[in-house]
Picture 1 (cartoon, protein in one colour):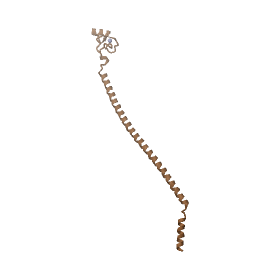
Picture 2 (cartoon, rainbow, N blue to C red):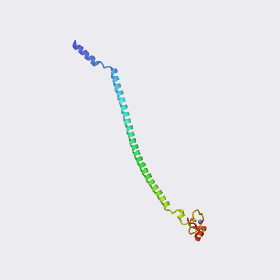
Picture 3 (cartoon, helix red, strand yellow):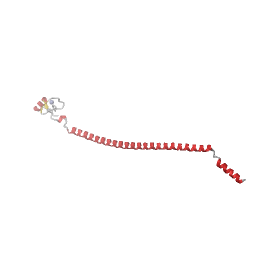
Picture 4 (cartoon, rainbow, N blue to C red):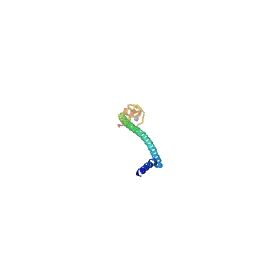
Length: 143
Ligand SMILES: [Zn+2]
């Protein structure tokens, strides 16, 4: 009977289906895994896209910062040379003021009497009428 027994076993093995639930379960799990994988791949590709966009924005921001730095440097240089020009102009103004004759030393014709503390109107030789008379008489007090 060993032969018959073996045959029966064989038939039983071939005919007996594998537990169907297990197959279905496996297929479902594989499908679920593939769906999860597809979702993950989609998320990864979205993340990559976001990363690329962020990288591009970062590069643009870097360039903006670089040109802003350049502009700031140029503005600084312009301000520095403007300051130097202003200082030179101020020096020129004070040099002019130094070079300008003091009001008392100026010819008195336009202003008045050159005698200290005299507000008299100019008459002749840098004096008002009264001091001109004193000068003519030689009685003008020497300063
Ligand atoms: Zn006078």
